Image 1 (cartoon, rainbow, N blue to C red):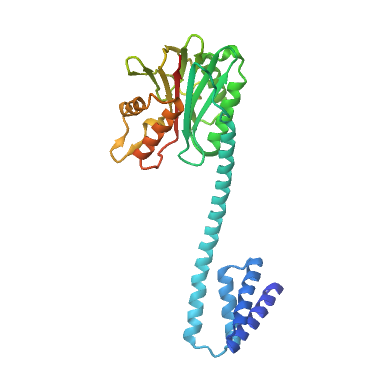
Image 2 (image 1 turned 90 degrees about the vertical axis):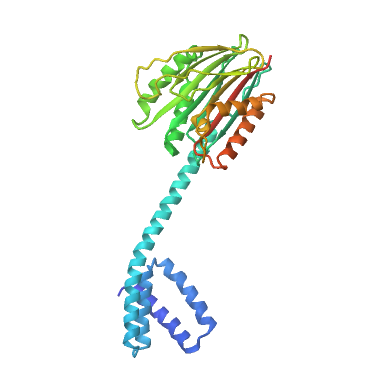
Length: 337
């Protein structure tokens, strides 16, 4: 037996002997303090049981054979318990490490999102984004080019956790690094696609819609990369029309081409951009229909853009019993005058 083990054995023998003779509270207190020493020595549960068995046999040499056999049985039980306990501790430590990494990724993600929504007397913008888990796979971005255009991106990274946060960082800085003449929707997606294809793993890809709103002409030019179709809402007719976001998802093919579309807006008209977490809200009755979503939006069209997205989220959250199945991002642009 090693020196440290001998020392611990003598300490425990003294404590147990004192308790057997006196049954005092002080002996119990010493036992509790001794347990702290065992933790410092990294003693396993089965080693502690073995220590007790050895000391008990010294102090009570005439123990009945049944008690000795019971102690041996307990020792065998504790060997299995010790292995399971150490595995549990290892898994718990790993879980804590993962939670810490996800917290860092979530903080990184928040830093990547726009700090403010662009303000304009002719365009009202509302945005609501909620992660279903610690780290979201959804991302949105605004670009004000100084030439009466506002660039708007909504993306969905197929993947979660730290890789999703890193992909968002790549998207943000790739867009921000493009010169103004490359901010046309189709050209932007083509440039971004090359960046994504070269820098993400083959099991990840990104869907995205990018549009540019002309504050003077009130035109919304946009391109899609396999993203969930948004809507155009005609205020005068109160009709919704799907926005065409067909196109290859980002990162699959290096030389992808993206078609560009244009939508003219009159006062009161809306552009609705969203992630698939909005249309895939699910309750016991099944997924929400796109027509149900548009009816909810129509119900709140008299409110500001931000109030619309807040109210739509509130209704859809209740629809699925306040448990999001996927990340939720809803953006609404409304022409004011």
